[in-house]
Image (cartoon, rainbow, N blue to C red; front, side, top):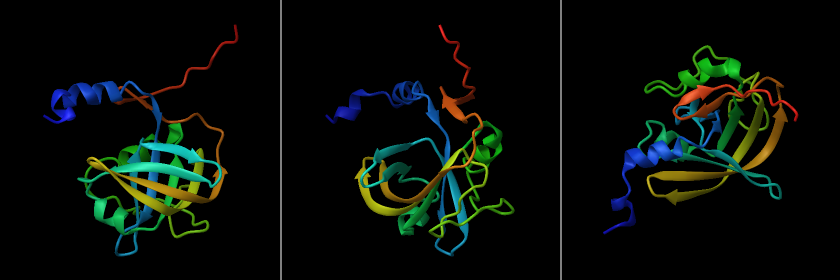
Length: 167
């Protein structure tokens, strides 16, 4: 019996959803060279020296082959006003940019203007991890672009950050 045989996938997904996360759009170029993006909340910092970040992608993703072929990525941390971009890049189907504007920094990965922060990265390593691939990327350039409120995801819904009252 495998360890995972005793875990109910629905219960596990529900438990995972209790962890509030920021929302990113990870961008790259598809195998034809066009800009694509994919909404992900599986993003984290890894190291300051060297500067490394990590995101993960499911092996069943429609964009799996494009992401596996790519060496350069942009990670765009979305603000509340960019909820439409999150939806655009999270629904099944076409993940191309269409008429969505983008910038280029040090790599060919699209950077979305107006994001809270962005990371322009090159792949450092890919790690096989169950039904996902972990992409560990070296940050080549980063900037805090906006001071807006973050786009947050909790229990399968977007949520607002409530201002804290000092005690």
